[in-house]
Length: 119
Image (cartoon, rainbow, N blue to C red; front, side):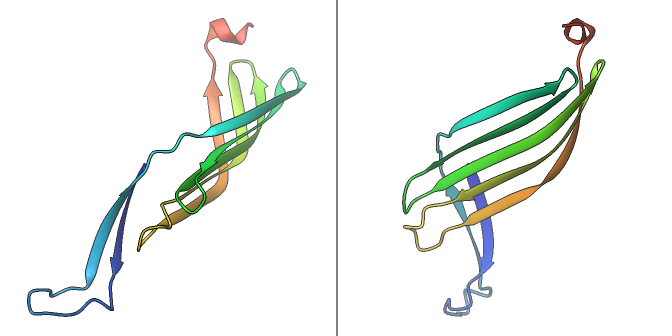
């Protein structure tokens, strides 16, 4: 993952060569994620799905994500309504670190080909 940030550094000393206090930084990290998911068929055309994954190194970077959805199927079309989220944090051992969390609802429409619709 790569996170690019831009921020104002008001404590940075102002000089003639330095006409702005704005600065930026790039954080890169690679983390494996381990997860689990479930799927429960309530009826032939309705199922509930959940899944989540994550990984953390204590006092360093971490990330996790989750998703839960209700899926309604009629013929070759499936309507998916759910909620998902994602979180990351770069290493807190650095002078400047970044974290972010994004969560929210989603809607999806899936189309299955004729060969899959009959199974």
